[in-house]
Length: 152
Image (cartoon, rainbow, N blue to C red; front, side, top):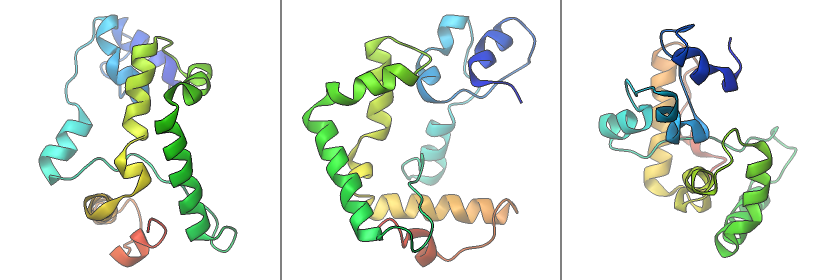
């Protein structure tokens, strides 16, 4: 396993044949003289016709009221939309790339309409990801109702 910040320099230097980059690096890999073999987000959208299920907010069952947690997330997203600069400092403190345009593009990947409400397409994307992972033997088979119970 290679630390994230060493992937692009390692590929550029020939230590590795290829690497997987995520987060803000998807906007900056070309600065290392690298080219994309495939953008997995573009591949997913073309293959499924669905948005990319980038992440999840998880809690131990019974530890948090799901409806309250969903409200907290929605309010956080509303605040981020109302004041985009507020979250920028946090991201800058943890980002590998410090340029504001890169940070803003990165935030845009996560603070969007699907963050506030998955909707039908978002639920379908989560179900498709879980179904594919189960088919590949990576996770146990789940029902769509279990997969989406916490997202509503």
